[in-house]
Length: 240
Length: 270
Image (cartoon, rainbow over the protein chains, first blue to last red):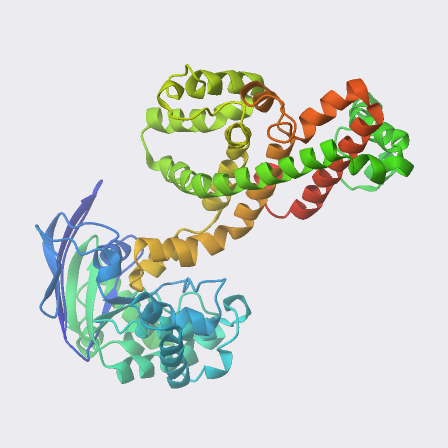
């Protein structure tokens, strides 16, 4: 499974025009400052916003173009939201079992599948906990499990570490990278942090003012940053 | 109390000029209830309440109040969803909708009863086509109660919907849940406390309904004579029975008040 998208949308004075391509087993980072259009990209991919023109194709399925608009619930995307949005009235197990249940699996089958995911992510002991009782790192793993349990064609992570305390970020980032690689599907990480890019991504698209200003592998980006924004990010990262 | 206000760090503007009317207002709320309690024929209470006429009024009130609340839930929760959604509508239809939902709150209930008669009465706009007679039946009691009480539920649920984070619904949709599954498994449970509070308020208001009911449904013992109507009529023939009925109604109100507390619907209960 791979994805190819040409995203064109205008909202007021802001215009987004961006090509994205991710192949199976690769993780693409969409790196950019606040206001560059990252959340518009997410909204277009997830289907909460409509494209003005362009297309989104996942595998051989057209999700969006001039004549098609596949609804959010039929897009088969796993989204890990910045603040996770775990359902507060459900247990961890019920959260992860939500997508299998919505897909028509029986209660028992949904729970078994959810438990397998929790086990794989090393948090089976949290199955009966409620989201408010979780630490940030635990909540993030539950959110990842919930997204992956929907058997998505594409995994979308929105600033996956922004909600975490600085002390735990490094550990959680390492874990997250490992789980994404184990899962093996195409992944897009939206972030403004070069730490996330360096730890999670294979390829990078830098987005500034709604347009791609550089496409590169992480290594190329470090060696030859194309804009002053990237140069500053890379420099402050190497200083650490 | 003045003493505790003085202990507060921020005393505000409360001077005797304002304390006195405030206490008068509280007295106006409290003293009549005190009078009711003091004058109640406690010893005769079991005997009074077991009179067949009173027992049937009590049963009728509880029955119609419950049915009205159920109908208000089935119709009112979807209406609350529409009302919450209408925040994104243009101004004219949005205000029209809100005005329509609020009308029964500000309309004198008697006027509501007259309006219902003109619609559903034997010669009414719709009533003339009905194969059966609606006014002066228990069904009319229920319709009058729903008319007057449903806005309480709708506004309470709408408040809860607005206060809830709608992004949970987006998260559920990305996980493959259909609109109805999102409603059933995410929206409803998240606003359940607001729905419960709204249903309690609605039940309470339905139980106390007088004006619309007596106008549209009349006062036939056993079929349309609800507790408040029975209380009013008893006052002229057997005041002790009226007091006993009032006590029952008050007891139910207090129970609802305790059930609500103030954590459920900030906008409605403080």
